[in-house]
Image 1: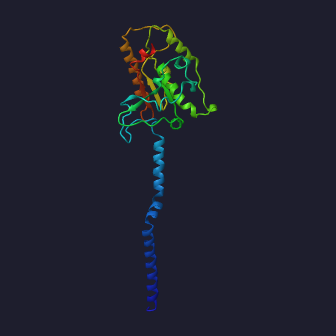
Image 2: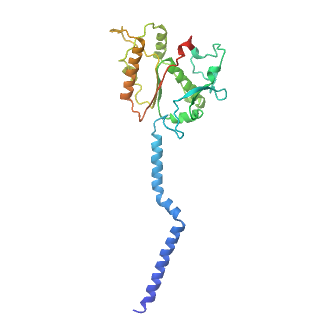
Image 3: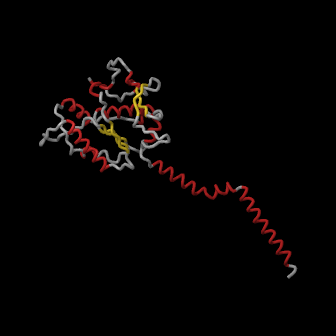
Length: 270
């Protein structure tokens, strides 16, 4: 029995030395051990954050780091960064909208940009915008006002897209509608006909409505027409449109914008 005590003492010392060494290593490289042990959770958290960011609403407008409201601001004259494209550089502009080609003497209207109160908007980045729109659909729903917005967006984006990777088509229905607008003298609002075209709006990621002229087409002679004051007809049409948006579009997946008419629109057109 006495002979076994030294052996036990050596074993205990070896065990104590091993434990002390492990504690020393953990203390010395504790930060690295923490990273190693926690890396799966970090990777999983980063992946969830990336997925959450990827599923975010396109062009979501809310509180930024500066808590800036982009809808509150004014138009400022800028000769440094405006215009962002020249009229002759974009072949998608309809001939009736090429002001410079038709002899408009001034070009100052091309130098205005929107300036929010309290912050500055970043410069337009066509490549970044295309990445944000990758796999998504953006619709401009309305009349000639929104057509101008649509063409302007195309002109801003098309320069960074290869020629063989872009196209723009004009369908017969759109051409006919444009001709009829110029010929119609009595404007008739078909407030219940929104579903005829709205079926094409479902599933879009971004929808831009404008609030100017809303008219319907007729398969036969119109019947049961009620004469209304222009403002009341306007309110009726927009009310139906808003109800459809609230019922059919999910604010968590679709961003909806409404563009109003400028008070000087009619004066500028004459």
